[in-house]
Image 1: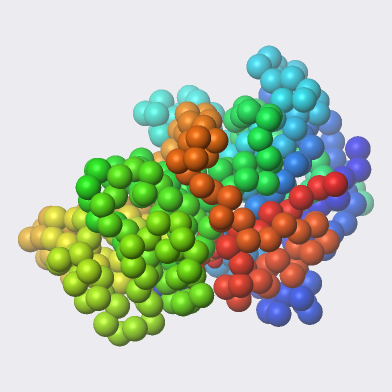
Image 2: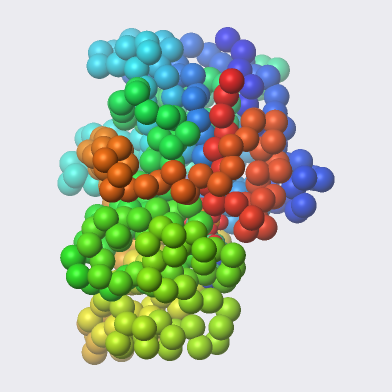
Length: 375
Ligand SMILES: NC(=O)c1ccc[n+]([C@@H]2O[C@H](COP(=O)([O-])OP(=O)(O)OC[C@H]3O[C@@H](n4cnc5c(N)ncnc54)[C@H](O)[C@@H]3O)[C@@H](O)[C@H]2O)c1
Ligand SMILES: [Zn+2]
Ligand SMILES: [Zn+2]
């Protein structure tokens, strides 16, 4: 069948993306689903910084590639050996397929699935297949999903069945922003009720983390960003204070607001000054967690002795250390009951041809989560 995709022919195209148009909306050939694969119709897809990082080269991937990795979809056709999904089912798209058998899957850590990470870096589905073609040439899958498109073929291991009676616009953010942000706070750093939390970097992922900290019982939340326009939404979502990361006194301000530093500081900005600030804002004995994906050349400098003498922990969090088939349905239920008001993360709804404008808005800090919808 034919589908529109958002094709990235090459990385490293400079801004402004409204002029340079790094993504091309083009018709491509989508093969039928193979064994254990599913063809889905995309209902809503969120624009995440990790898409932007493929465009600007911070997250190098082979090209040409069809972008998009956060979204929800409706099952259209199941390939052989897919016994537990049917046409019409609603699914969340998960950006690491988990094989279920490798050592990290066996340990209960599907976000670290070894074959999943290998195929994601190659741009194929979990089986190794490539189901998108343009004029006979293969187009790679972004993280097994490629959901800036009308239709996609995904491996069953990239899908989580969810309720079909909710607005897909809000459901879309659960596949990446909520899974990553809430997961970093609750799964990776294991927030304890009553702790103080600093959230550094208030994009879709950081603000989802803020909501997770609130729902998980933080006693004080300090929101931090280098862009002061993020203060208003952070305070609305439940932050007690906003600190401007550009202020040279930012770390001491956070330490003063938290009587010596927060028990848990979480970073979602993707630049070293933000991670350094998160570490400096963490109290003795505390945890600093980062879920951001900085450029692979970035290096962190640490005073190593204080890791020991102050019993500090520095934690990395991929896909929120989540079990997506457990966490996405549970956290969607929390949205339904009003305990996780993610609707405020959605700043724009756009059509697929506006995707380059959306990337420019994200790069300039003028958007939180922008959701591509499909008529
Ligand atoms: N670990 C994972 O599984 C995973 C999943 C999704 C996204 N990510 C990464 O998480 C990060 C956040 O993604 P997003 O979509 O929310 O991005 P975003 O661009 O929407 O938000 C980033 C925020 O960081 C702020 N920022 C920039 N420099 C800063 C500084 N020095 N101090 C404080 N704040 C600063 C920006 O103003 C912006 O508000 C990205 O690096 C993305 O690649 C990781
Ligand atoms: Zn993402
Ligand atoms: Zn695995």
